[in-house]
Length: 425
Image 1 (cartoon, rainbow, N blue to C red):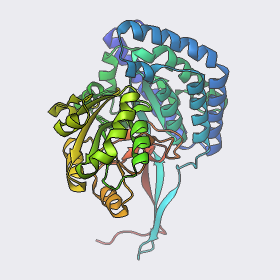
Image 2 (cartoon, one colour):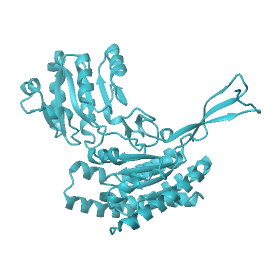
Image 3 (cartoon, one colour):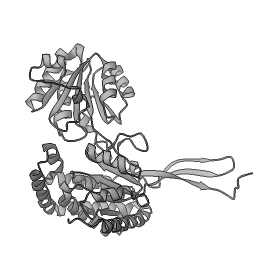
Image 4 (cartoon, helix red, strand yellow):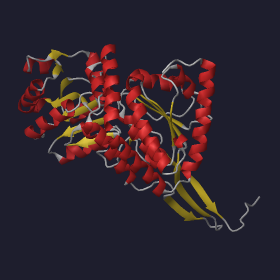
């Protein structure tokens, strides 16, 4: 899309924002039946237009290869019939969820007779800025609709053609259900200046959700005048406790690292208890190396495994998003937790052990959004949590933490019912 002159772009953006605010008012009052019809019709459109979507994605993939995007980025960008079907099924799964809007969270009566209820309501207008994953268009749009919000989407230029067609399918569903078409909009240009304007539109947008790499997240945090719901890194740890089952350790480590290396739930550091390293680590490293994973180990690991590359201090802080894993031996549970606290990003961390007390201590004391026992970190996903989909994994502490799904895209208000009460002087 051609670059738009800045004054014209600002005017377009504010028109888009005003339309979104008006649509948000209608969406807040929309019945569940209408929202579900929109999602189901959107799913049908995705299936019917799968061929068009794949053709558009092929154009995006060709341009991305010409730009020299990494293998991990290409994996995030690529669509196939299975991934398109997963998007459609995700919309249907979200339609099947309970509608959070209007849910009464608590209710009580004061001594003066006032009846007070705390009730879920939509956030309003959600601005979503993301990079190369076109499926975010479907997931984010569907979740915002189900929660009664309007959304303004800004996908990356890499996925421009794919995301545009996916958004068309969702808007087709909105129109069929009789909901305002402006409930889902995208920015009128791929010009980066539009992001800067968007981050200042606090009168139109209630929350910004960025989903992408460190540079994008840091820019949003630095420039936004709107509250931000985001995670910075997915530096996930897998800890093999001395009481880990060796076969389970191999299966979980291989899945956590190699199932999809480019997602934020992929393990980036493996910790192993020193006392059990000779028993646990060799089969794990053999399986990982056979699968094409580069091992970057501390001195002890490199002595055990000649194929390992010596790790640097920076490796413990790196989200590789690639077939690379840093590996360190630790002196036990305390040292493992200390390492995770010092180097982790508070995203997802997992312990493999048959010792229930050690597992419970890990679950209680590791300060991450998602903490696991005997499970792959790649389960860090809203769909796998039964939430239909997610916009992202929030590592912050305010409002939402972990997968951001339908409930996390709502807030609440208080409804106070009286019988003529006035407050005494």
